[in-house]
Length: 172
Length: 148
Image 1 (cartoon, helix red, strand yellow):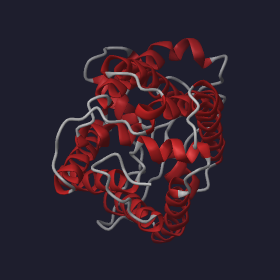
Image 2 (cartoon, chains in turn yellow, green):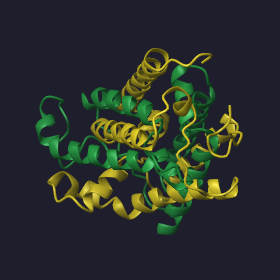
Image 3 (cartoon, chains in turn brown, cyan):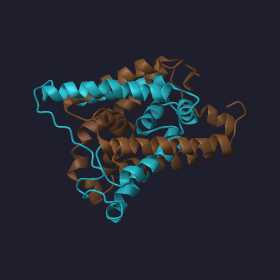
């Protein structure tokens, strides 16, 4: 299987895992920060929403490091595309195009709904794949084990329903 | 330090982009049990990070000599409820929070809608937090459900 991005072959999983561990450990050892991305959504919200939840110190004090980290993620994606065959805007969505086949408007609606679940769910759970799944599990934290099992199980059930029941693809 | 965070984010984003962790097909393959890739990535990342954290804790200080402080996440009913909601979203969008930003960087236009949804979702959670606090036994508002 290849990536949607220019059909590139993926990095070996072991190499990618070691690289992610390296970033996680560098963040802790260099800057005393625990890896976590989803709180960055709160940081962005805190720039616009005056609600007490977003103006608490735990959120606003994290902006100085989380916002540059998030900007780096966008930059990393840009460099990956630019160095891997050229950057260009695209609607390509691989399996989704073959099995579901919605056009641009449908994709935007689909992704917005997915995003709603992601934003609400990660902030309710207190973290996402990075904060709970990588750092929390590696730090042997029980809430992270509970959360990771929950999101993996829900992801498996949802995808099985979408691609094996609602939009079955022959030969999948 | 801002530059350090920007560089680490860039390296992280590049790896997510090239490994399949930010790829719709590989995420669905993980949930369909047709692709091992993401399970391998997460397992190796955790298995290498764990002894690394242990070693840094043994030292007790960062490279600059700052006292190490790792804020532990609280345990509450939101872990399961939020985890399930997030898992549904991860499956629908084929992206978790980091990869939403990576996909935007790659030029995938629909990822902007995922980001808009995530910000609205986080905004909703923030406004409903006081109402959810008692039924889900969440920590006080000034602490939140966990930073990460």
